[in-house]
Image (cartoon, rainbow, N blue to C red; front, side):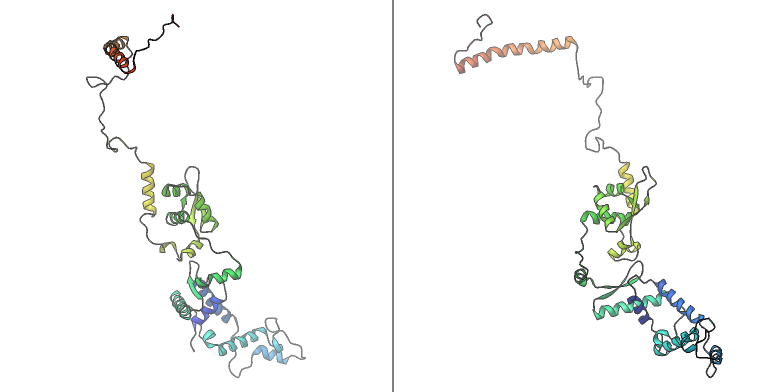
Length: 328
């Protein structure tokens, strides 16, 4: 029976709660062959092992140490015990320990993982195989999440607010990004959103920007990749609005924007002359100008006075003359 890579991978996945990467699997196969070559060669049929012969020639019933200085079972060296155990495992489970390939390619591992994932989906037993940024991991299906929270006595997960989602999107597409850049893009304060994302371990502080004040810069974590279900940032949907090039151009234009002129507002930009027929004199304080204005308006006031007195006499009876200082 040929070696069954799929069964071995499934056992490795079930044995750990950490992500299992392709490099981890290849390293396990390398160690398997290193251990096999470290053991002495098995003796041919009909030939007695030299170490066993030496052990049988000794007198007494006390087990003697083997070539490596460690006594095995019934006086046999430990290396022989290991050889017997390996041979027994090969004879009992040939699909696990027989004809183990010395090199397992990444393509072979991915194909086996895809078969395991398809079998789990078809069985519908509550387990799913998820490939994350750090490797493959067996996880329970999300529809069983409520039972797991009941078992662990955990509260329901809190959803991110719209403000936090927008801030996370800016960080994901722009990173590394400072808080001032986030606020310039969104137009509102980003402090609460950044604190919430830091608390949920979706973003982290990557360093400081090489600008005046050395502000903090933020980027996304590996947990963010698992949160949205991708393996790398390259798998995020393309965005012309939030790409670094578009944001750089937008920030540059917003920082160097010119002040609106009368022409931009639809007004005439014609300037009034300071001298000449069309000149406007805002303040005239010369005494002759004041006298001239008083002479022009005085006759009109004098002419209107009798008319006002006649209307008052006709509408309200005899007018009452004001008292003079002598009468009062």
